[in-house]
Image 1 (cartoon, rainbow, N blue to C red):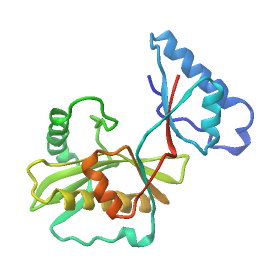
Image 2: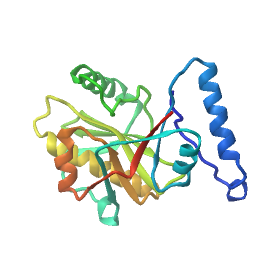
Image 3: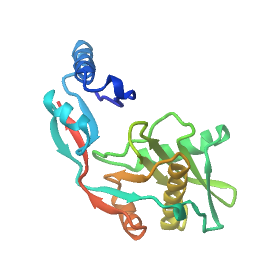
Image 4: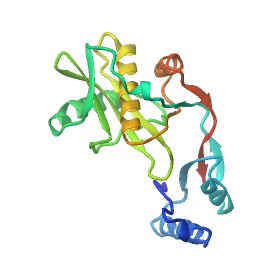
Length: 212
């Protein structure tokens, strides 16, 4: 089981032990429901990281974490053939098709698992009136950054590297619009890493998976 999100928004309620109580309660619920293992992801420089460690979680770092600080120039669009836009309800069938395509072509363990629910966090790539890819962008409510949880381009689309680049640019624009200062990709597939490096993303080990 996983602790998907955790934080205390109001400063006046911090340093009161509430975080530890919440984590312990979450762990108790997991045990009651029959889970034997708990995972959570957090940054190594955060107070939350030390809190989880104190509650018995073990540091398990992702080997490839790509990060970039966003600038206003990242909000521009520069390729007419591929347009990245917000998800619409009418895109559901196309996005499900791409999701199924990814799942049917993926083998073995993978860090990127596409969600089955779609909303404002989904950015759709379109070429010649056809949906050819999408990304899933998570806006952390407690941190200044955003994270791309998933990205996929149609296997039949000819210019995949450019489609990937445009989806990344779309994610950057979305993050900037929402006031985020950084964008990260936790352990992206090998086929995307060259594009990320060309776009100025650096590799680090600041993202951590914690295991209990």
